Image 1 (cartoon, protein in one colour):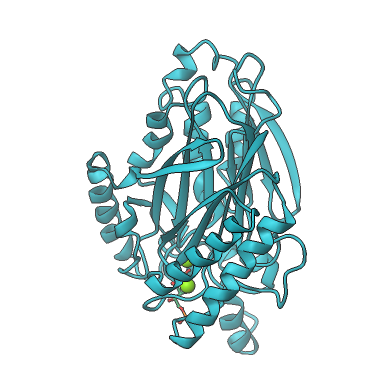
Image 2 (cartoon, rainbow, N blue to C red):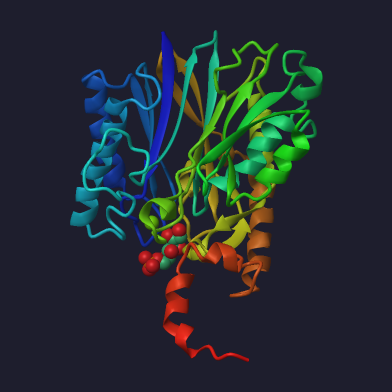
Length: 369
Ligand code: F6R
Ligand code: MG
Ligand code: MG
């Protein structure tokens, strides 16, 4: 029997502004998923939050893209939206871009990452949830986890990892994908994923020689781009990722290690600014300063026969205190640029936020010189 871990998230109303999730929405989501569990749709669940995003972490045996599981998530968001509307929370129902569920949550607004696998003797899995950024924010950390020996000691020490990993990279604008094998195609991989607004790592697979079969993905990232679905800027995508670890895969510590470096990501205020990615514990996921800084929460689970044992609030640990401090220093530095690049996103990326509307107003006033 294979287990599936599905993480689906949506911003269905902020408390206050775009900063946090109101406890009543968490409660409503828990009730909804509990009833899904009683009906046998899912085996187990955990409701988390990251900034203003409601995060549904669910286990089941229905495989990826299950209509029943996606519909349960959709109904859960619809229920939470009703409460958000009653409380007049900010942007109630913001990410629900469709009027009714249509068979798969993809393309409807919420973000989704899923992995189906044969449970190993012990199955440690980490779930990462970011707020105020886009899927490309996972490129650097996921690359480091699975392909950088300076991050992951196992790549040079563990004989079952020595053949490396295979990366599935998506071009999110052209709807195309490419498979790249590391270590031999490392430079090609980097040349693509450095352009993190266009090329995003979707999945990672083990290669021959690993204990996990080659066709079983060991990491998955939500690549849903809200502006491509809505046709205009409706908020940043705020991606999630799932990463399996240990026993021939990067260890938990190797999976966490990249987050000790608060790298610059796109998002923050109005989805239009570069700023540091700050690792935080669940209780510190509320975004504040300049609607940020961009945050990442990392929860650990042991999966036991489809049950979620956990979470362990891993990025909340004191080992990430220096990363938080560094992130805040970088935030100070970046903020001082105000509306100037490279704090504000490049003109090309601004095309996907509110810039076209600003240009529309003044375009007639440009004179030939
Ligand atoms: C970023 C985000 C916020 C809003 C900002 C303006 O993803 O959600 O930074 O863009 O608070 O929001 P509105 O336009 O709703 O006033
Ligand atoms: Mg919001
Ligand atoms: Mg959000």
